[in-house]
Amino acid sequence: MKKILGIIVLSLLLSGNVYSAAIGDDLFKRSIFEKAGDALDDLNPLNYFKKRKKCQAQADRADTVADGKNYYKHCMSRG
Image (tube, rainbow, N blue to C red; front, top):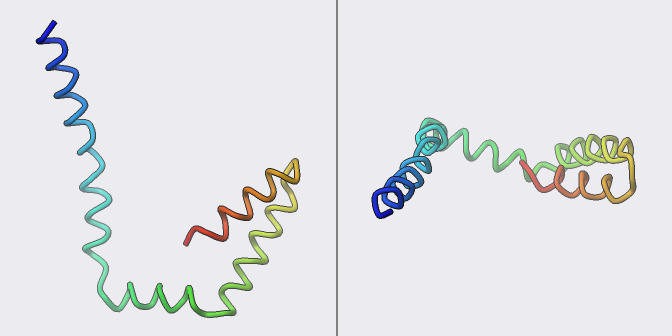
């Protein structure tokens, strides 16, 4: 019983590290200027209105009002 429990715990610990390299590599490869450019793009009002128009158009095509609201909310919150 202890061996089975040990195998399960060990496999869970090792399975969590599978995707860590893929996520971390992208963060370190980008220069500080690219990161700053992304931050400035988020602050630009013209980009906000383009994003808002795109999200609203997709939300209007949703099956229900609740689905549309949820889609719009998530669309506007992600970068």
